[in-house]
Image: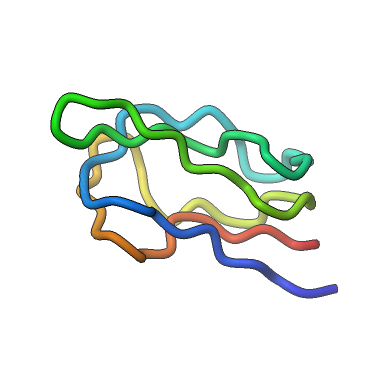
Length: 73
C-alpha cells in the first residue's frame, strides 16, 4: 500500500475542507477547496484510498505544489 501526496495546484488559502481523516475517497473526489484571486479551486484526490492526513486547516495559506493531504491507496 503506497501513500500518495495531494498537492495544491495554485497559491492561495484553504477556504473549506470537505473531507475528514479516515474517510474513503474515490478517484476525483474533492478533498478541499482553495481560494485564489476570489476564485474557488477544488483540490482533487487523483487516486482513491483512505485519507490519512490533512496537513492544513481552513484559513491556512498554501503555495503551489505544497502537499495538503496524504491518501493511502
